[in-house]
Length: 71
Image (cartoon, rainbow, N blue to C red; front, side, top):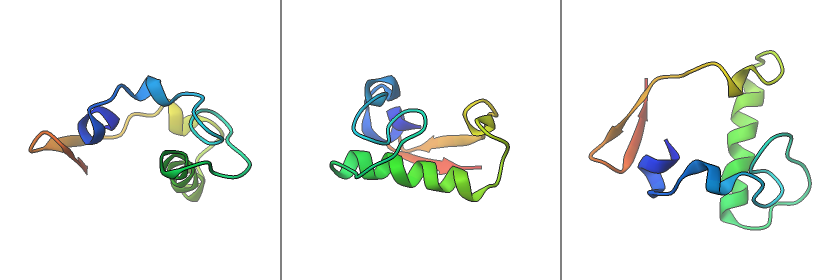
């Protein structure tokens, strides 16, 4: 999904800032880090068992080559 929206490899963001990667905390450092924080908050809102959000697939498609659409 990150590749669709940004053209960048999602692994490039692993460990970026305070929230891009596993178990983020602290203050966001910029817009990219804020996006990672919001992503984590969305997963927290699902009340899924710990870490299952990282391993359970979800379905989406890339609309017009740049816009991710869920479901």
